[in-house]
Image 1 (cartoon, rainbow, N blue to C red):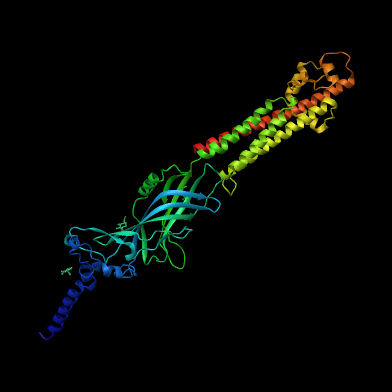
Image 2 (image 1 turned 90 degrees about the horizontal axis):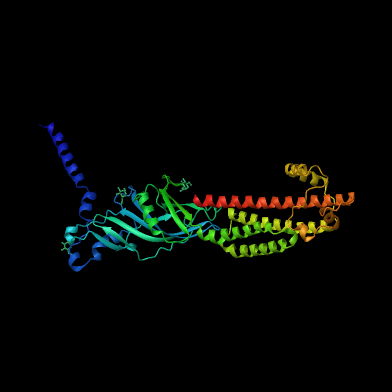
Length: 452
Ligand SMILES: *[C@@H]1O[C@H](CO)[C@@H](O)[C@H](O)[C@H]1NC(C)=O
Ligand SMILES: *[C@@H]1O[C@H](CO)[C@@H](O)[C@H](O)[C@H]1NC(C)=O
Ligand SMILES: *[C@@H]1O[C@H](CO)[C@@H](O)[C@H](O)[C@H]1NC(C)=O
């Protein structure tokens, strides 16, 4: 008996202790003290005194055990893409940020309150998670006086509009057919993983769908997709939880195609077609000059549409167009000069040029010579209108007219004239081919870029 007492006492102590623990302070408090007395809400309206205990706690993270991290669920809707500035590498967009978290100090019994399950509370009375966007490059212009939804179980939903100016690595090489891939990283400003964990409230496709529906305005940018990056912790002296999203947007190129590519293409096409203007009529150079002037004016006017920084492909294209036009103008001037010169006194062609020309012309030159049965005279002049317009000097004309008393000197003169005319012809054809190749390749490039 005597020996049994301590054992029984110990057993009793255990029982009492376990009973006490069962009704531990946290448990009792969560069912009593933290329950908001909402009787009369349905009759006299909401009573702020009932909530005062909650409002007074807003300075601290709402947890009962401070070692337990608060879980904040995030969702957002991209509602507009306002501006993409390649010069300072900023994307300005508008998002509605939604935050969900749990406040254990808020709960009430809806049955006592006439079935009220959800209330709006001015957000300034509540503790709010300090979620920010890492790429944010502006001051936060979130309007004050926002409200939060609080339900009877303590779940809080807070939604705020944000004009987000975020830094983004913009690549404008393919302008105006470019796509951009920007990141939005949500993180807590101060709370480490020990205090705050982030989660995503909706599926990513839901976010994408809602956003795409909203960004359907006919702005310059179209939302392609939103993807969630694999979660990783931010570096720093301690770890911060992060949620990262990739936002892929695409430019609508129609404006630029109509205002930039089409006029430039037309001008280049006209310049190419002007090769059909006979060079000896002397109209070609002035015509090309006017086109060049027009092109320069066009470039000046359209400069505003081009991105202010970087070297997009389209700038290279314009530079190439301009150089081609200048080149063809120079060629026209040179040919006019040359034809005038050979009409009076043809200079001797440099031997290297002559051999190059002969090698280049090779096949057709030989064939034609054979056709004309080995006669010493070279081919008749091909430039249209040259004969009729009498650009050629007397001896050549005489020879062409078949006058038999042509001397050796006249023949030599004629040969000189002919090789120069041939040279100009080759130059003309060469440049024309360069034009054609350039036009087709740029057309194909545009189509390929547009379709993709
Ligand atoms: C709730 O408040 C009412 C008065 O507003 C009071 O009569 C009632 O006893 C309170 N209920 C509890 C459980 O404290
Ligand atoms: C956050 O989302 C997860 C899963 O979607 C859910 O289980 C959890 O209850 C949510 N937490 C809050 C505070 O809404
Ligand atoms: C955006 O870039 C990231 C890497 O920086 C990549 O993983 C992701 O697939 C890209 N998204 C799109 C749509 O290109």
